[in-house]
Image 1 (cartoon, helix red, strand yellow):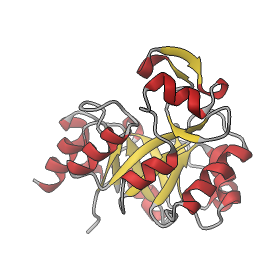
Image 2: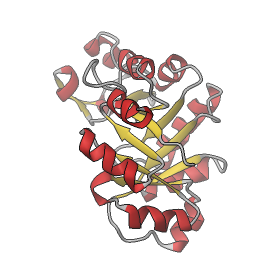
Image 3: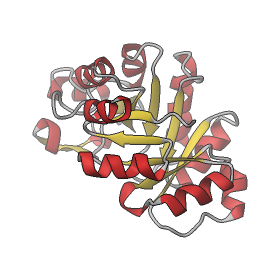
Image 4: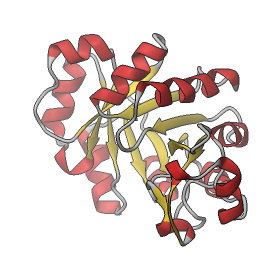
Length: 227
């Protein structure tokens, strides 16, 4: 029997600000099997947790992250934006899905992978994003676990699968039904989905047979799975 993995999207964002240490810890406390985080570099090349390319939505400063040093980010957010290393330390032995939002270059990917390695977290970290970013991850770490993000129902090209060697195909949940899950499983891959937040949509994903659900309401998902 397949076991559904409950992944907390940016932590526990309905109880604590997303992509913060408090949010990650809250999600794990509420039963998450893994936490998903978004990682971007500061101007001085320090990987930190932030989904957006600016501090505007979460922190009230319309300043692009790429133009700010890590010290400036710390000052503007009161230390609220953790580094990747800090996040890995705060999550203990738990699984962490590292999302690489936006266009990323090979240097950024390598820096992220290097931090994961330096923190001794390679065996519990896996990566998700589109094809270009995941090709860069595969080049930086031939052993990395990858969830290749898909935004279309078209099957990924065989050449792409051969190059990326994903363990997962990671779909927007609205695209997923039993037929798609069965097809992906026949191809020897696992299915992860993002981000159903209602009980109805979570039940539909569970019934479809997906292997992992990333959600903003991880406690609700865990209760449905285990109830």
